[in-house]
Image 1 (cartoon, helix red, strand yellow):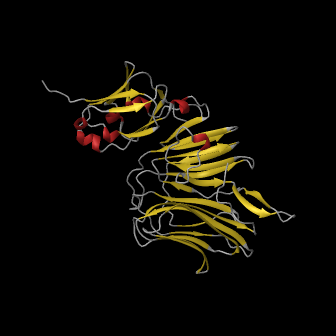
Image 2 (tube, rainbow, N blue to C red):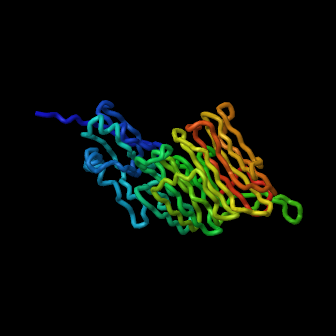
Image 3 (cartoon, rainbow, N blue to C red):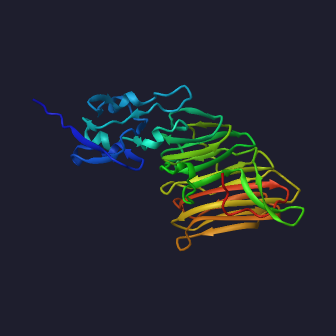
Amino acid sequence: MKCIPIFFCLFVFCSADPQILYLTQFTIANGQSTFAYEKGSNLYLSSSDSTDVLKNIILTIDGQIIPLDTLRDVTRDDGSQLPLKLGDSLTISTTNSNDITSKLTGFIYVSTAKQANDENFSVYVIQNNIKIMKTSGQSTSVILNTAYGVTQHSNTPFRTSLVKKIEQDHSAKLRIYSDIPYDNYTYDDTPWKSLFYNPIVFESLNENGIMEDTEMFFNNIEHIQMSYVSWYILSSGNINVIIEKLWMNNIETTTTSLNTTGLIVNAADASSINITVDFLNNPNPQTLGMFVKCQPTDNIDFIFSNNGQDVLHAHFNTTFPETGILEWKVGKDATKFQILSSQMLPGAYSVQYFVIDGVIGSLTTQPTL
């Protein structure tokens, strides 16, 4: 009689942080393992693996048997992922061979109980295209990327998606963060997670010579390529975000408005080719700037320039890593923005760049929702 080896994993519930569990870690060789989760939390699957291998991974929740493939592509009317509620007990078993398991690309995302009970907390899995629409209050939208697949470009990220459109009311506020939110996500302002702000808050002199905050809202946001395993959006008010499972190998692009902002990210293990953003021709003085987070493995330069002459230049190397740096110039002209490195794997970075037609006061170091 042929024996089929089964990996058996026991989960116990308690107070626990949210977590991502890769399917590759559920191997026969690992034997039994225990993972903490909160009773009442939600479980989500993000995977582009075949149904044939996913159906061999079995969840058992309070005695109910659930093949993992049945969790994929199950969505609510708004396009968000329909979660699996966790109870008193959870086990996971597999009959996949170690060879098959080692090639799996998917992962399980487990929220906290507080997040599971928040009606304004949603999770979206990028299998194809999604549209996120929020109409009121403060909302948290978690985005889980799936493996992109093989392309002809050597610098294609393993997981990626393209934010093709962000629309928001002038009264709405939006932030983009890397990773997954923890239970303080409603108030989270962790510098190493924050990537993007709209609006941005400026300090400027009023007619009485007193410094006051001024919000600069961008009607135009350039396409954003997001090459993270997971990321999330905090928003308040009406927003409309369109995301596609698409890789645009654009190492040189042109902005689509005189007043615009964009975000460029590179994961730690991703290949980064030198990137150029050309600005629309503008004879007027500009306010321009960038919010950079960088953990380099080699030299990386972020440069605004005007016909070859540096206007604003931020340099990073292994002896000068930063969790976040904000630089700006007022009344300067720039024709392009560049990210330059001599290495294909320069390290992890993110940069929100912006250019404004006209002169505005100095930017605060802590933009807030």
